[in-house]
Length: 93
Image 1 (cartoon, one colour):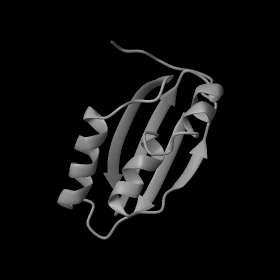
Image 2 (image 1 turned 90 degrees about the vertical axis):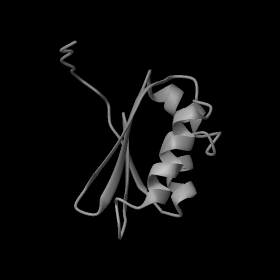
Image 3 (image 1 turned 90 degrees about the horizontal axis):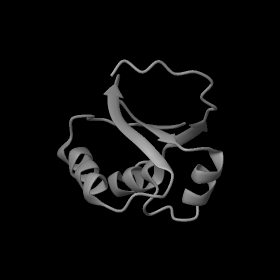
């Protein structure tokens, strides 16, 4: 799982939702399972779930279509990015 985040002055700004809309209809890297956009306290977060760390590493070669970077670059934001190993999951649906 990767979590990218960047501070924004106005997390409700239209350009953020426009960039997200482009990501939703755009090409997705192989191995991406799920991706979430969230906000809180003037920070925008993107949480991406991958098949494995190799899928994430492969996606790094195509930064334009990589959700963690393509979105933030489209918004003109510099994200920090952290990678985590998922060691447990509870599925409720």
